Length: 271
Image (cartoon, rainbow, N blue to C red; front, side, top):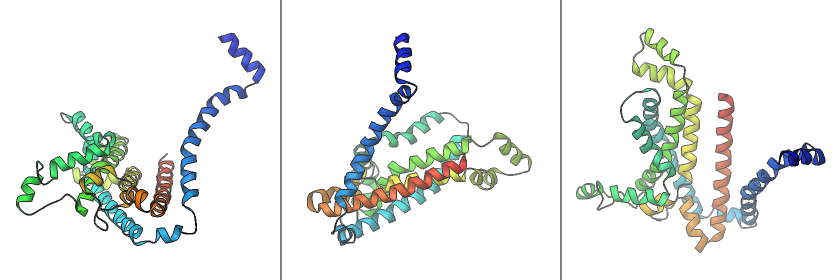
């Protein structure tokens, strides 16, 4: 086998070994790129802007932007302290807590939607008590935000946790020596240092919330102007109005590309 490799290098040259790596990489790249190019090519036409500016598309876009923005704000408010405790704290069952927070990332969205229904549905573990006092969450805009929060917030926690964990311990000790309390350490030292990781996590959360579908349609349903987000409108439009579905798909691709480019830039600056 060794002699065969030496003979191959001698006959084909050093470029042979490069092609072994390059060829499968190009195949995988084409597998990702060709469907996206085909989608954009299929959607661009004389009716593209008419479909993009249609009432259904506008309402779905507006609802997605509003709900995903609220989800991101909530994820930052509640997720950042949690990430800090996981990164810098020492307590029992920490690994189990991390497992629970990471689980929604790998769960199928349909399972997430059923879990939310089991907890907050009208006959759910908590929803039954809420229903008794006149509060019904499923099939409302609040349900959209909760579905997005369930599947997207762990991304912010994960990114922020990594950012906090990479901060030098000596900075923490120096802050304590200077008389800083826990809140001052968190607010005035840790957050400014980990700000890029926090921003990257927030962007990933916003992008994931913007594209959330499975948990949303199971827990929030499909009510135009109330719970019909862009991914849900794309799914419905596939059967009713393909032009609107294609236009919304291109918009989602464009927004996702912009957000990912910002995230990549933040990662480069951090390096």
